[in-house]
Each structure stands twice: as structure tokens, then as C-alpha cells.
Length: 235
Image 1: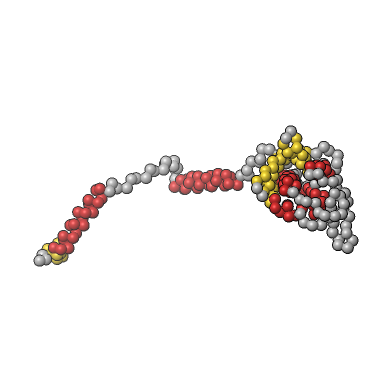
Image 2 (image 1 turned 60 degrees about the vertical axis):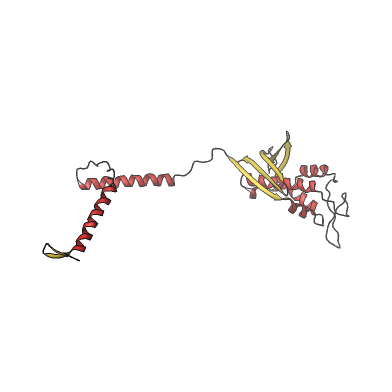
């Protein structure tokens, strides 16, 4: 049975009064057990004689922070401490094999295009091939073939032959990328691969034929169907 009580000139039912008491009780318990919010540490006081001076100090502080941030992001990086260039190239061995195995004397065309005279002589001596001679052309067919320096059947391409040429091609491409001025400034015959004390190295020839050339460091790696070469040269 609901009882009514006169509170502040109004009739309040006992059920409303009970809900209000319970709400106040649980609210007080919650506030007493939650600990309350901790006060945030106050910023150091600004010693300003007026509000305008305090505003100006805040503005200057924010401007200095922004300026420092901009200087850090816009400052140019330090240059590389050494004048060095790096060039890397990777060659797919089957591609070279298919290229030099094409009929029509493509082996000689390939070696003429990328090898210097010294490298050409080394290649033919290594694989027991005759010295390179001007290749006659068939008037009727317009193709050239070679066998022992004469017109005839194609030279048999061996895996070692293709691997050797692929290594030279990768080394020369890497050297061109590491050269001064980039690959466009150096041709395949302007760089020579040679061995010194059991290690391969690159020689950048003097294009005017007046100087001894410049040395570059070379590393060649063969792995399955791929040949990778890296050259380190003076910039």
C-alpha cells in the first residue's frame, strides 16, 4: 500500500521516496570507492605582469617549437662521406644461351659487340675457338655461319661458354651503372674485366686513349640459372 507524505508542500508517494533514498545511497557508495580523479600537474607559472604579456609568451613559445620542428624536417641530409658509386646487374643464363645459340653467327655478333679485343682473344683461347675473322655473308641467304673461321656449320655452344659470357655481360652492365655519368656515358667495350691475384676486377678504360684507366672492385656470383655482378667504383 502506497503511503503519501507531504514534503515541501507536495505529496510524495512512499515508492518514489524509497527509489530516491536507494539512488542516493548507491551513488554515495560509488563515489566513495572509485577514488576520484587525480589532479593534473599544473604547468609552471608564467611570470607575466599582464594578461597580454602572458599571451605573447605563449605565442612565442609555440612559434619557437614550430620553427625547431620545421628546421629538423627541412634540413638537407649530410652527403655520403665517400665518393663511391655502386652498380649491380643480374643476368638470366638461359637468355644468354638462347641468344648466342641462334643461327646466323650470333655468337660472333654478341662477342664483337660486348668484348674488347683482349677479352675476345681470351674467350677464344679459353674455349679453343679460332681467332675472330671477318665473317663472310651468303649472298643468296644473307646469313653468316662459322666453323673454325670458315663458312659452314654453327659453333657448338657449351654451358661453360654461355656461363662465361653471361658473367662478362653482367659485370660490364654493373660497371656501366657504377661509372661516372652512369650507363649512358660508358659502352661495353669501355670497361674490361680482368683477374688480379685470383680476384676479378674492372678496368674503366680512358676513352681518349691517353690515360691508364681506372680500377673498380668487382664481385660475380653464379647460382643456378642466374649470374649477379656488383661493381664498386670511384664517383
